Length: 96
Image (cartoon, rainbow, N blue to C red; front, side, top):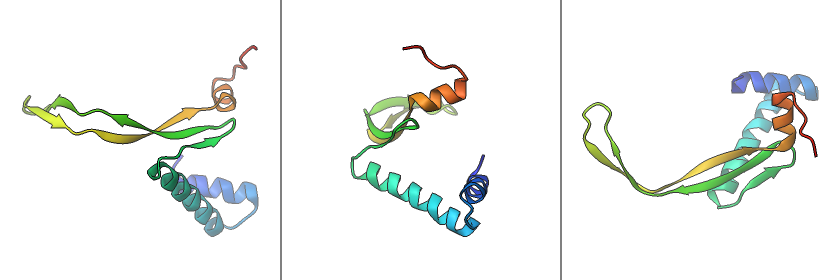
């Protein structure tokens, strides 16, 4: 599913225009991005958590030439699926 398809489904399910659904999706993306940029995490109970992780600098190889290259340290976004999402996708409810 791409963004346009997501907007279409949200518009239909919420009985709103595609324009308003598009604004909603863009607003959600912007809010999550802003929170992650600010060092916060975003938790949606049952769905999952968006957070960041630091990756250390490391040495890699250029696959074309085989030459070593230095890959700088960076902060990368992460998503961890929540229990309800995992169960919905797998079709299996976990026992307590």
